Image 1: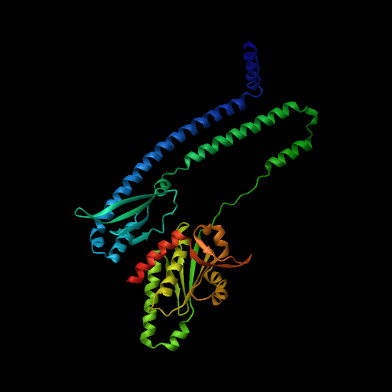
Image 2 (image 1 turned 90 degrees about the vertical axis):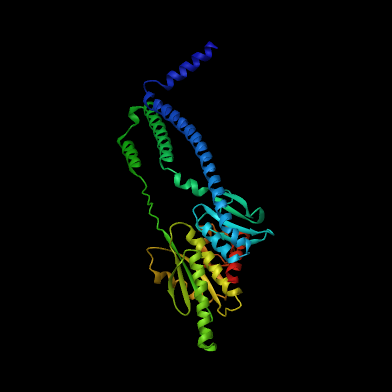
Length: 388
């Protein structure tokens, strides 16, 4: 046992000898600080997460109670339009991912999703409550709260920054200690001026990194295929009815998904989605699918159309962006929806979209449908709009 203590003492003495003491002491202190900081961060994160969960639960229960109180009359009267309007208003509130209203037969009466929130099943929490008329249950409402929206605003850059600084400091000390050890073991006559110059030149070369990142905007181009035919075959009153129907459906697609009308003429309509964040792409896709489906399934509509979704940087000119797609729009089939191929992989849209496989290097890809969950939400929304 005494021999073991002597070996440990010798190792520690060598490790903290006068030659190596400054950097190795710094490594030891920085490592201890990093461990302590990580342990404290873990404890604080656990406490914070528990507090957030309590806030989310309280918020979900309060929003559910508010929804049941507001929906009582419309559910009692089976008023799907009023129920949809109330559900849409509640879904737009902060942290709400979606709202579903059921009648007394457990059939969906109204449904609305918030396009701004991230619909990630991992962070979604569902809260359900019955809708009462007196003591009778006349329906129920289910609200899904996106818990991630309660934590994103509380993130601080200080914690990862301190951890990064400690790690870089430990690496720097290791490097300096290794360099010092190497210099002690190399004889002085091996250090030629050329060696010193090469070392200095290598240390002076540093790569330059550019962190500039252009925020992208999304263009949705709607092409009306048969507008010339309608103008030739329909009288003035019927043409006016078709244009009013187109304008009404366009307003639905714009208002529900935060789009803006940029250009409108007889043959094409261009919507722009330029709010901050990745939801511009999702909004453009939902808007295109909803607008095409409204005209495809409405018995009064004679208009055929197709859509194309393209991403562009703010520094690009609009005319230059649109010139790239004019030829493509002429070849689109009625009621088809296309998207710029590179956007699918760039924004991981394969989690949301069902699309046709195109040839490598193809400029556009045809969207055939949304994935099951998103398609069901869109179908329910479409059904409500077609009933109006």
